Every structure is written in structure tokens, then in C-alpha cells.
Image 1: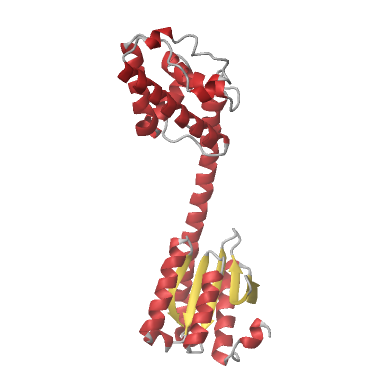
Image 2: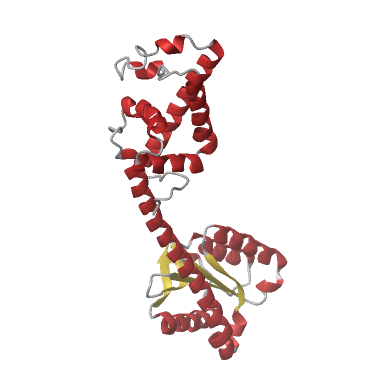
Length: 300
């Protein structure tokens, strides 16, 4: 048994609603079809604007709960950006059905779709002025909002690509960065402290770290810097998981570290381990398409 064979016979009112709405959308946007198949359902009317905004219209004229719920599910499953729901005025008097529609409408709006209120189909059938003015205006407003959101999304995507390019430039093309290797990661922390504002790429990265990763990276980095300067310790041993990869560097130069009080020594090691963990994660995120958080004076 097909989907169409399960549906009740089409009433004359339902047919006229489809024809009237389809003609309006055809005249207004240039492309409209009745009985449009999508996502396993048959939509009463589907239209698409010249800039690609899709419009879905579902008419519910048979005032039975099962029929209403089925058509509400068709609305829910539609991928059109604008969704219009036309009903028999009898349905508008049923508070439980109105509530079901409003719940679905809120869910769809949270997902970014533009959904009309329930529209009294009798007005479309009997009042040409209503169709020409109020109904036409309502459709235009929903389409305008869908266009605005589409434009904002495209702008955000372009902005995100610019930010990602900038992030990769200041982090992944550094002269002390050589791919995702351990040497680059451990070296980066020391270079940030040594070079500070001396190099443009470092200045830019430092501003991102301060504004975008203050609690998790910047504050611990300043604490690490302060403790290191307090004990005039040029280098803190790297965690054991890095030692083999970097040929023991940091271990052989750590004589000054041995004279540091145990509490400060333990704190320096913990801070360095933490900072390296954040560096690893940030490098991974940028490599995999997520721009640096925060901002700098050189951001696009």
C-alpha cells in the first residue's frame, strides 16, 4: 500500500487551497509545484525563490486528529526553510491540536526554520483580498527572514575561513613549528616567553592566548614565567613523555632546577605539563579546522 493510498479522499476545499496558494507562489517567486515528493512524504505545495529559499505549504482540511498529526509530521520532516501550515477553521477551535502545533512550531524555529502560525484556510478560499494582502505579506516576511539567516550563515562561514587562515599562519607556520611533533610543542612555550612582542607572529599569538584562553593557558603561563624568573631557572625539565622525542634536551640543562625548593619545583613541573597539554589541544584544533579563540590586532 502506497502513502497516497492511505490518505483520505481529497476534498474540493483542499484542492482549491493547493491551487490558490501554488498560483500565488508561482506568480511571486517563479517556481512552484503541487504534490511535491520529499523525505518520503508528499507536500501539498513546494516553491523555491530565485535565490534558493525553499517554501513548503501543508493544508489540513479533514478535521480529524489522525489526519492533523500526519500532516504535522510532514511539516516536521520537511527540509524547506519556510514552512506554512493552513488548516480548517474547525481545527483552530481545538485547543489540544493548537497546542501540538505550537510545540512543533517552537521546535522547528529552534532549528532555524521559519514557520507560520496556523492559517485559517477558509479565508484563503473566500477572501481574495486576504490572499493578496495579509497572506502574501506573511509569506514575504517569512522568506525575508530566511534570506537574512542564509546571508548571515554565509558571512559567518566566510569569516570563519578567514579566521582559520589567520590562525594557521600565526601558529602552524611559525619557524619553531615543524608539524605536530613534540619538539615544536615544547619549544613553543619557551619561545612565547623569550620572544614576547619581538616577533609579529608571537605578538599576535600571545594576544589570542590572553583573550581567548586566559584561565586555561594565559594565567598558568604567567605563573610559570614568574616562578622561573624567581629562581633564575633558564629551563624546566620536560615531561618524560617528551624526553625520548627531543633527545633528552631539557634534562641535561636542568642543574639549576635541582636547587629549587621542592614545592616550587613540583609546581613548575605541573604547570609545564598543563601548558603543554593545552598547546597540544590548540594545535590539534587549528589543524582540524577550528580557528584560535580570542582576538589580536591583526585579526581579519
